[in-house]
Each structure stands twice: as C-alpha cells, then as structure tokens.
Amino acid sequence: MNFKNILEQLNLPAQCKKYNLSLWQCPQFLFLIMGIIIIVSILFVYAIGTKYIEDPYLVALVVIGIALVLLILAFIIAQSFEKLAEANRMKSEFISIVSHQLRSPLSNLKWTIDLLLSEKVELEEKKELEYLKILEENAQRMGDLISDLLIVSRIEQGRFVPRKESIFLKGLIDKVIEEANIFSKAVNAEISFKSEDGLPKIFFDPSQIKMVITNLLDNAIRYIKDKGKIEIKLAKKGKNLYFEIKDNGVGIPPNDQKYIFQKFFRSQNVLKKQTNGSGLGLYIAKSIIEKAGGRIGFKSQEGIGSTFWFTLPIK
Image 1 (cartoon, rainbow, N blue to C red):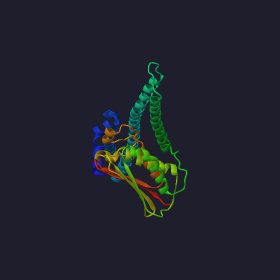
Image 2 (image 1 turned 90 degrees about the vertical axis):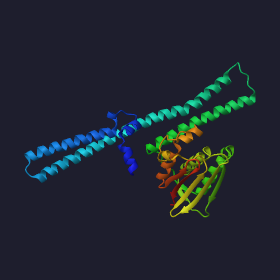
Image 3 (image 1 turned 135 degrees about the horizontal axis):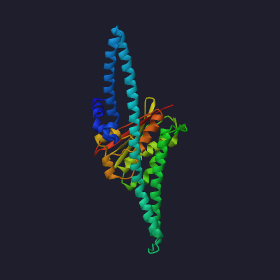
Image 4 (image 1 turned 120 degrees about the horizontal axis):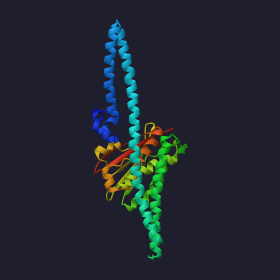
C-alpha cells in the first residue's frame, strides 16, 4: 500500500461516504474508537498491575499480552464490519446498474410489442422485420447481462471450473477476430493481428480464454475513435504466451485506472460515449486469467488509447 492509499484510508469522512454509512456505522471510525478504548484499557490494566504486582517485567508482559489480544479482536471486528459495509455497497450498486441496464431494453421491448399489436397502425412487411430485429437485439442485451451476472456468481462461489484441453491460442484469436468483423466494420475500425511463428500450445479451457479475448476486443472496438486502429500481438515471453491488444480509442482517465478491474465499474468518459455495458467484462477477464496462473494488466492515456495485455503459462 503506497502513501496515497494510506492517506485515503485515514480520510474517515470519505471512507464513510464510499460505503454510504453514517460516521458511527463506518468500519474505519469504529476501529478508531476501539483503538482509543484499547489505549484506555491498557493504561487501566497497567495502573492496576503496578498496584498489585511487584515485578515490573511481569506487569509489562501482562499489559503487552492484553494489548495484543485486544488489538487482534479489534482488527477482526473492524474487518468484519468493513466486509459487511462493502457487501452492502456492492448490493446497492448492483441493483442500480442492473436496473439501469434492464430498463432501456425492457422499455424498447414494450414499445415495439405495443406497436406490433396495435390495430390502429398498419405496417409494411419490411417495417415489421425491422421491429422484430429490435426485439431480438434488446432480448440479446438482457441475455448478455444475465449471462455475465451468472458467470460472476460462479466465479465468486468457486464453481467456474475450467475444462482444460490443449489448444493453439493463435487459432482462437483468429476465430474471435472473424466473429468481430461485422462489428468492427460498422464502426470503421481496422484490426491487425501479428503472431510469432511456431508458438506452442497451452493447456486450458478454450471457451474461457475466448471469453477474455472477446471482452478485450469488444471494448477496443466499442470505444474506438473515428477510423480506429486495433493492433493485436501474440508472442512467447519466457515460459508464457504474451497477448496484447492496442487501440487508439478514448483511453481511461488516470483517476479511474485503479478501479478498472472492479465489478460494475465503468469510467466516466466511457459512460459519455457508450451507455450499454455491465462493467463486468474486465472483472471476468481478470478472474479467468489469474485462475489460469497468468497475469493481466494495461496502460492507458485518455484521448490517445489503451493497451491491454495478459500472459498464460505454457504447460
């Protein structure tokens, strides 16, 4: 933990505001109060000890022992309160985001169905097909959100177990790029892919790795600027395969970068450009890569672009 993070932890009003709790319900403030109680208790024990115990070393040992026990108990209690507060915050955030993400497609579905069922409006066959396409797209949006939520639930319960098999990562990347071609052409984004020759196979679940690559490529395309370029590279680095995807999109603001892999988080400049999205893709990607024994990271500059990368061990 760096000095800046320590200062943030010591900023009690900000910490309490983050959890949406009053001062007397805030874990950090309660820990401070417990610290004061411990100090008072230690002084009281010391005063009593010096009165009834003649050996000063024995008094010191008793005081130190009681102090350690109280500190451990205080830390455990504070950690428990913090976990409860964080769970409460995540629950509120979850309800807010899911409600927002479902409201729009549900409204579109209702509007389109009402229009199709209306006897007052006569539609041409071509128009009917367009409205049916709207129904399909909005149903897909809701399905994608539910799928992401189920994956997150399985990850947190330890039930997202990979079905490992020997695969060539290059072939998997080619397939993901091919599937994304229609989307990339629609936003005028050019995708290039360079891979070293003779790369070895990896032993992992192809569906999960495909999910990671798809999430990263989808983000790069979705937040690209006009005439965007996306460069994908695959190489061998030591005992790992190294994947990199670079774009010249909107980038990530510096203040948002530390939160980028958190559940439900979406940076402010992304929200202005694209309202769709659950904020779960990068959390899922990080969980999958780390479970595979790899690492994932990024570098980004707002207004210039982002580069995401991950490594996977060669087994």
